[in-house]
Image (cartoon, rainbow, N blue to C red):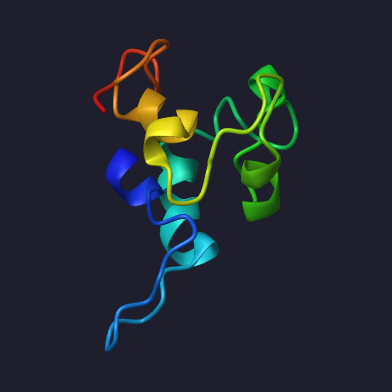
Length: 92
């Protein structure tokens, strides 16, 4: 999960199709994160259901910083590098 989130936003490689939020990232977030962080009732005011919402962040501020995964809590929490580990009680 954490490794794939680094691709947000992604740089396309020559012959590979470009990575997109809707096709590549959103299915992972839907499976692991959207039960709690959705547009209807975003826990911590963090909605991960759209690219714009991810970039907006939540009550604790921005969760992604392009090109800086070590400063992006969406990466560090899902990689279990910081607490609270996300998703709770699940593998990274």
